[in-house]
Length: 472
Image 1 (cartoon, one colour):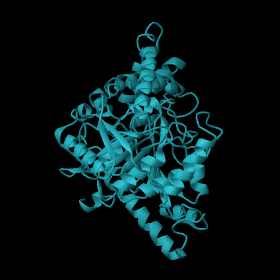
Image 2: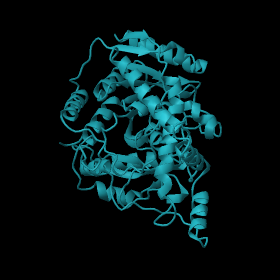
Image 3: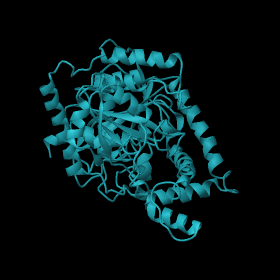
């Protein structure tokens, strides 16, 4: 299948590629959105001779997704000089489709953060206001798309795609757990995380997801079988303009929305009113599982992080401090190589899973996770999707959301990661020049419905052409 740029001659395609590259280079220079941006000459050489659905498109990739021959730092000193020897499955697909990885985007260290500030390579800045955070952990990937980019890849462990999307006025999708292969995604919390997508337009989201959800036998968490074929068929209908949904029922919680700052509340309620105007039936329901989910999530995420990051000892690869004895070298390597937030989560995760405490914390959290899943799925048996705010507040100023003080920002985003459901962030406009958004949470493999709803909202609830470049 040929891509949308296939009709252009060589010079026109080169001009378009150069324009994309210059915009992305601006995000590196102005907002520190990239840890590594390739040289234009190597990119244009790679574009030449390619033909496929994504030919001519430059795709920024979060720096915890493996791309052969490019740095794979995870935003950490620990992997500062590590270069991936192989491609993640989604990168293999991108390249096969004609797309070109333009570079690796900045991120919170090992994806641990929600502000884009814990990176060893410095904070990412919000293009709507450089004194504000763009959200994390997929901060650079979001900024690259917000600055008139086509699409980018991130990862979502507790809102790391959806929160930056809301804070930068773009779409952000966390697919159903098992939809996209995690082969080549450096682990933080395996049972929670998924590779996610950023785009400006809903049809681009459907187009990209359609091609990237190809089954990968190397990832044992991927779903196989007929459900994958059905989703792809429906996604194709979405981007071909043949999809439709009628009589949708949506649930929201007035009580939860009132936990937000007043300007955010008003925007969320306005968006719900407009959705009702589009023919969606809305119902105010009790979502008593949302607030407890935050504590459940952080216990599970920290325990998995402490296990996954045990491999970074300095013995086999990555940063190393040679301090004589083995144990002293490991101690100093991990003390200097990891940042404060990563060390905090490793320590807390080790404590919560240690002998004598696991029943009080980790096992209890696992039982709580099951309870959240049961409560959510019960609601989704009555309603087609749920609507929640993405964040209780507007983008914080730099320094305001670092560490435990900022964990509360995740209160609305962690549920889909605990349960595995898909969730899509849709921007709902600006408050005093700062973006905010809502998220739609659907049944498993309901991505076509969520994306199509996003399409219906374009021009009615949000303007996909609105860009921070106009206010820079």
